[in-house]
Length: 456
Image (cartoon, rainbow, N blue to C red; front, side, top):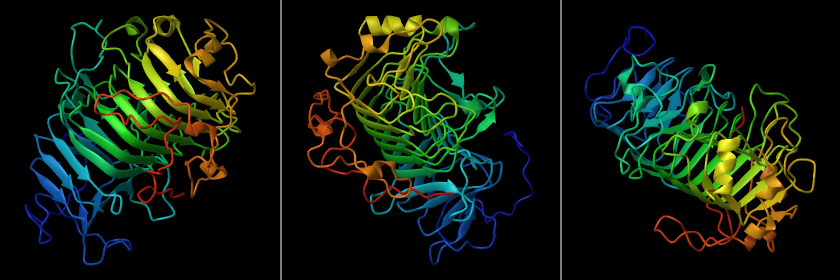
């Protein structure tokens, strides 16, 4: 077969099934208990090459080891309330030039989850949702020959559908709104990883809003370059970084929550709130476009008692930049850390800045900053200061339920310190300029009604 794996012989129902779904091949396994009444189980056995709609009355299954590509410029439309299940090692890929129109509602979110039984779903069982766009990315400008595109890290160059990047910063890969992605993300091989949701070279024409990424073994959300803007993101109980940014992402973000608390005693990787890189090749730490997002109103919560690999509220490294404001950094084993001379140069130039934020319960000191690195230490306290509106060792006023795994609440208590003291977000049409509080939530809990926190 074209993509990595040889699949068993499958049965198909033709170009259009009786249920009205177009161009979706069908196998006929037993209908699971949680299939909507009157619906069917539709197995997505072949790549989607023409416009296709998934209906809420059905349950859709991506077969074991199947990398399901939406390709040839096709649009995959998903009705509100639809459930898509991934069997072990499966993956959904929206290729460059194609679109996903997954627009759920608060009352009927779209759910991508493991094909395991409810209550028995395990982290990293399947590969999640991968979107490949045509916006500008940093693909190592020192490469020979130079290129403005790359192949996603878990694919090989033999898979042209795995390419992303280009010159269209307004590229539109569709809509992902009121969507949950659960129990995905795994290392395909070492350092070549799938996440719950991965956006590669995705452009600013794409809408990503009200999205929860939950219970994965790798990053909750990873953004490889591009100009995509994201809003109302919940990254909950993932086992690697809450939000990972790389390869020249210059988009915007507002209203994000990271809850990194559901970890076993030891993990093979650090579990940071943020991890932000420019390019992973040392010779290209200063290559452009440089990772430099603008991010406002974020709550990051760590597992202070986690005693595995050293984990930080954030790691900024490899020449990354960015403007970060109105953040709560709460309860991580270590505070935010800056690394390497290229990143220090961005700090000194004012291109990497943290302001109007609260630091509480991180590390073992009142400074909430990590101790010195063994080599090339950067003194975080020289850059995260009260002069920038930052508050150290101030309780932000989050409720005890912020640490709950099954029924968390991130809305600050009445009179909380985080309800005031924030900077006014930019008035550029994307940011909500009324959000002058610190953290992701003020008095309006935008997570209510559409998020869920299932345990395995």
